Image (cartoon, rainbow, N blue to C red; front, side, top):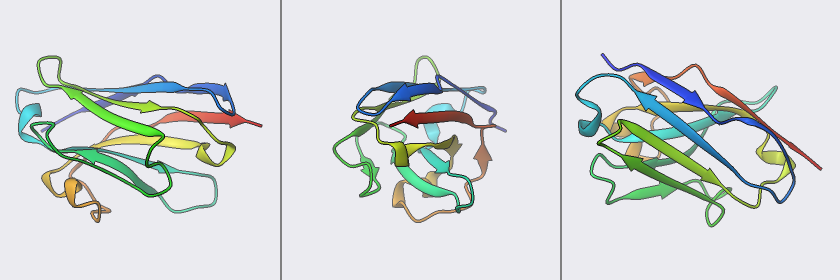
Length: 123
């Protein structure tokens, strides 16, 4: 069992930056690929990016490539999402997830989810 808790969301102006954190419980964190998803009002939840269990591989959605960066610290059981050059269309609830399949970028139902953190980008 893995429990995930996101933090770091908030309100930022377009062009600004935010860093989200996702703290995981359990001693098996380092075995999981970790990912970030987001859901805007009235839209389906979408994949943002993922990082492999070792941190050696990262994948991103085209919409965030070059602006967002995922990292992890296995000693702290934490994964991060650095978001730069934010746009109003990045406004959404951001969710952290854990599942080995996430690294494919095609998984929509990871085994574990966090509760989400709101990111709002004003124009």
